[in-house]
Length: 471
Image 1 (tube, rainbow, N blue to C red):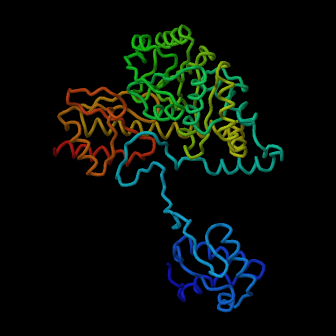
Image 2 (image 1 turned 180 degrees about the horizontal axis):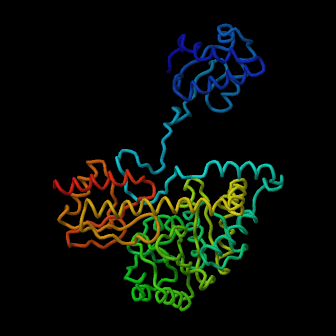
Image 3 (image 1 turned 135 degrees about the vertical axis):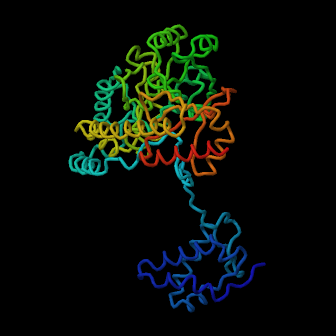
C-alpha cells in the first residue's frame, strides 16, 4: 500500500497551472505523466480526489477529472469505483535515460595517430552553405517527396560523370545506388549476395575489420585471405571455394600497395570462372601524391565488380553519403533492399552534393585537401627520419596513412605501445588488422596523418622517440 502524496505534489503541478488556458489541461496531464515516469510519484501512491486537487491548484474540477481519466486510459494511473485514484505499477524505466554519444572519439590523447579520419576542419562550410541555399531556391516541390531508392537522378548522373572522369569506372547512372556510406553499401550487398545463395565471402588479411561485422549483420561469414607483394594471393583464393571477395586494389588497406596489373587480371579471371563478384572498396581513391592515379578495377569488368565509395574521407563521414555501382545480376536485390531498409537517402542532402559536384566545388575541395595532406605526409616522413632513424615507411604514394616499421632497438612490441599510450600518443599496430604476428622484434604501425597538423605530427614523433630512448 502506497503512502499519501505530500505537499510536493502541488509543487510538481503548479507550473502546469500557469500555462495559457487553452493548454492548461494538456500541461497538467504532461506534468502528472512526468511525475509518474520519474518516480516522484511512486507506484501505489494514492492521489487526492479530483475535487481536492482542483481546489488546491485553483482550477476547475473538470480539468483534473479529464487529466485523471486520460492517464488512467494510458496506464499511468488506476482507479476503481469508490476506491479513489492511484499511481499504477505498469510503468517501467520511468527515469529519463542518460544520453550517451556512441560516435568513435579521439579524446584523451595528446597526439592521435590512429587512421581513418580526414581533417574535418577542412570541410568547405561556406561553399556547402552556398550550395544548400542555391538548391533550396531551385528544388521543385516534387523532389521533397519519397525519393527513388537508388538516389536522386541528378546525383546519380553527377556521380556517374565524376567517377568516370576521376576513377575510370564504367558508370551507367541507372546502376548507381546512393547509400549511407560504404557501410550501408556493404550491408545491402550482403543481403543481395545471400539472395544468390552465398553464405560467406573473402576479405583481405591484413585488411579493415569493418566488413566482417557488416556482412555478419546480413547473415554472411567472412574468410580472411592472405596478400602477397602484388595483392590478394590467387592460390588461397582459388582453394577457398568462395564466390565473392572484398578488395581495396587501388590502395590496399592497410599495407598501401596497389594491386599489379597481372593480379587484377587474375582476380577477374577467378570471378568469371566461379560466376562470382569482386567487391571494390575505393575508400580513399581521391588522394594520390607521387604517381598517376590507379584506375578502378571496376572499369575492366563492370558485370563482375561491385564498386563502392563515399565522401567520408573526401568531405566528412558525418554526411553519410556514399555510392555503389551494381552489376546487372545484383541490381534488383540491392535496390529492393535499399527501398525496404530506409526508402532512400534524404533528398535535400543528395541535391546539395549533386550541385557541389557539378558546379566544380568538389574538385576544388579535393585539390585543397590534396595539398594539405601531401604536406602532412611529408612532415611525418621527415619527422620519423630525424627522430626515429632507421624507420622504414611504405604505402606513402597515396591515401591518408602510412606503414612505419620501427626497428626493434627503439622498443619492442606491446611495451612500446603501452608506454606510448601512457605518454599520450595513440597508436594502432599493424597486427590489429590481420592475423600475421612477425617475431623479428620490429614495431609495425599504421600511422594516420590527415587529421593532424604538421606541428602535431612533429610533436607526436618526438614523444615516440623519447619513449624509445627510455625503455
